[in-house]
Image (cartoon, rainbow, N blue to C red; front, side, top):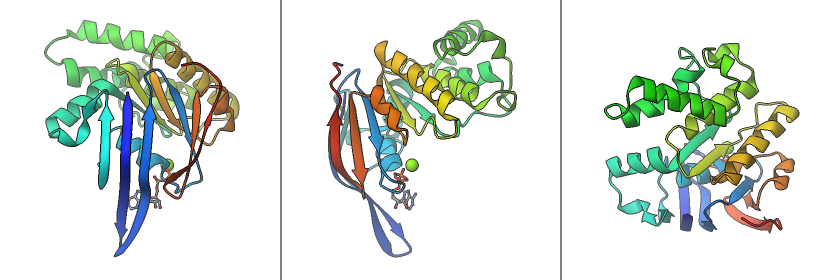
Amino acid sequence: MIELKYITKSYNMGGEVIYALKNINLKIKEREFVAIMGPSGSGKSTLLNIIGCLDRPDHGEIYIDGIKIKDLNDDELTGIRRDKIGFVFQQFNLIPLLNALENVEIPLIFKYRNTLSERERRNRAIECLRMAELNEKFANHYPNQLSGGQQQRVSIARALANNPPILLCDEPTGSLDSKTGKRILELLKKLNNNGKTVVIVTHDPSVAEYAHRVIHLRDGVISSISSIDKKV
Ligand SMILES: Nc1ncnc2c1ncn2[C@@H]1O[C@H](COP(=O)(O)OP(=O)(O)O)[C@@H](O)[C@H]1O
Ligand SMILES: [Mg+2]
């Protein structure tokens, strides 16, 4: 489903070159739940952004669903990001002037402007909020009227909108208390059980209960991979 070959990414910081990722090789299977852990600055977000085609590596190849990302033009890349990948961030990144339902509708408007009616888009957004287990009564609430856990459910619903096979989550529980964070991990596990491939960056050691594998990053390299004895 996802394959990285010899991925290197550096940043030029005022003349000094910093290697965020060095020669990363990694294969992630369809329906796998993979956790990426490591200290701050070890390259976790860079790795996730490269998997999500938000960022391009200096060297190396990425394949998503067998498609070689390097060969794509900007339009094709936008299509991959839209159709194959849902992103979930620590800070939810919801649009404050839109209510929960409208936030989930945004990706649907981009993709289905000409093919789905407003009503069909609305129904799909409601379905996604339901999959993210947000009580329907919150659909017309604005982000600032929702708790952190509820906002993260809205952002997960938005990530599900275009039904992508892959969910990439960058510290999705990092702004939540541990009990709420556990509920979000349980939701991600449920989505994984229902067929999504999940890659999650986290500091939460309890993620090992949910993940098939934990990848440990250190200074831009994979320092170890622990496989947890669960079948995909
Ligand atoms: N846009 C950027 N410009 C310059 N340096 C960056 C940029 N993004 C990340 N880095 C550097 O790359 C390294 C890895 O960063 P990051 O992937 O954000 O780590 P993590 O998510 O594990 O905290 C760090 O040294 C960071 O300072
Ligand atoms: Mg990060």
